[in-house]
Length: 73
Image (cartoon, rainbow, N blue to C red; front, top):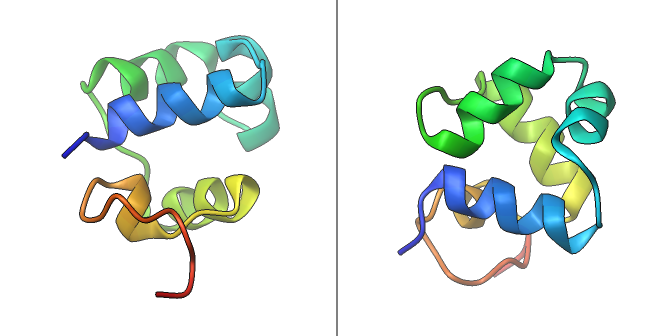
């Protein structure tokens, strides 16, 4: 299953957002967001929640534990 970095990139692209734009939305630096997508860093729990909420997906989907993006299984 895809990792967080893959899902983060796919979700960002699904909204046609640049790394700079998405970083601004979540209040992180563009460099940090790039590290998320490269798999070098992962967000805090609060960050994961914010990202999941923004994209309307479950945290399990976001971190690759399921391929079902629904927040309710």
